[in-house]
Length: 116
Image (cartoon, rainbow, N blue to C red; front, side, top):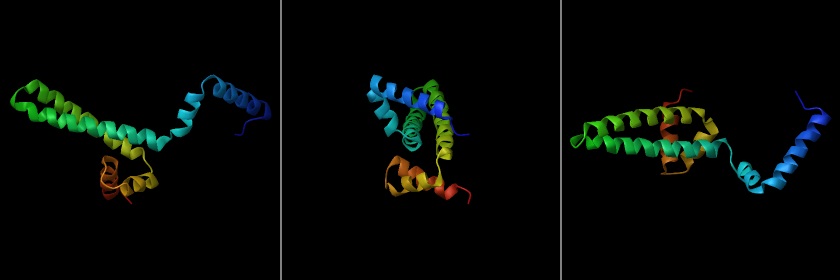
């Protein structure tokens, strides 16, 4: 449902005041979209997954560290699955075209296992 003229004027006034009060925030919000937000989260989950694997490898010295590493690995894998599932097909193709980056590799893996 479209906004009425009065509601549109109120919205424009709010936007104008926000731009005057905090221009850095307005610029940051204007630069960020869903793709960049999810790509950042995918990178962080990938790093957590690798850290969890390293912690599992430390099983020789501490069982507790290895158990925590297992939990970190499983949670980060679930988050990766969730975040990649939120991406659209066009975004996956962009990630795939990036080459040998974490997001590019994940994009290729997901396109292979995604149902047509």
